[in-house]
Length: 101
Picture 1 (cartoon, helix red, strand yellow):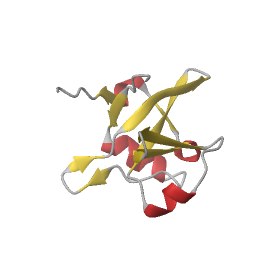
Picture 2 (cartoon, one colour; picture 1 turned 90 degrees about the horizontal axis):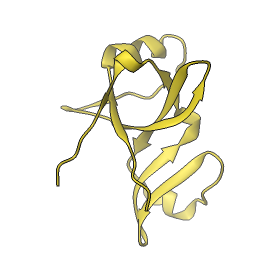
Picture 3 (tube, one colour; picture 1 turned 60 degrees about the horizontal axis):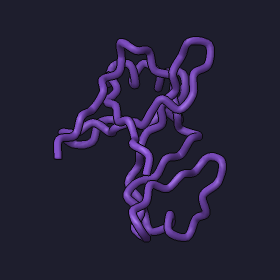
């Protein structure tokens, strides 16, 4: 299994992007910030990251494809990566998220 790199994005930066693209997802949920997985791709000195979403029942019926990746453990879906929702993020607007186990 490959290790995923998790990040948190500055809320102000995400709100700035939302002015130009209505498909940019909210990152604030209650008292938590939605994590991103990255770096997915680098284009013209911008690193692109994809938000991780909670799995829904419909995801069990959907097939993985070029823009939908399921993060699974055995038969359980832990999260969804929809590559259509990835955004460019400047280095100063992102912070690596460390989980201690």
